Length: 177
Image (tube, rainbow, N blue to C red; front, side, top):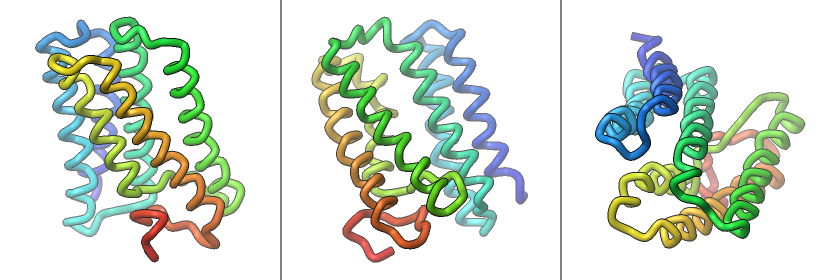
């Protein structure tokens, strides 16, 4: 029972790589994609409910999230065909996102990505993006994602810079815990 949440996170990594070999936006793509999303919700839920949450599980979940986002960028990039401004914006968000765990590594000697509400909202919006692409103009979705991702990335960076101790489950810059 102790390994189930970690196995679910690891399965998301495998399934994310499978998305590379499936035709984007096809029925098979959405099936694998929905399972990935479901696994992202279930691993943390099961870990918390069974008292099996661990640092390894948090890291594995973060790694699975990063791999899934990377695979989606790779697979959907040709379909989205973003403008140079959007590419620069996304790279800027990535740099800010990368700075946070680097700061955590220097300050706390461990890899850490925070589980803030902003990061969860960004994750939800990123998750529904391929689904909404079917009915909402892609550029509108991209701007929404970039705004939310920018705010949450900056919030995480500020938390890492100003915190005296590591708080991976800090909900917001405005919360005490």
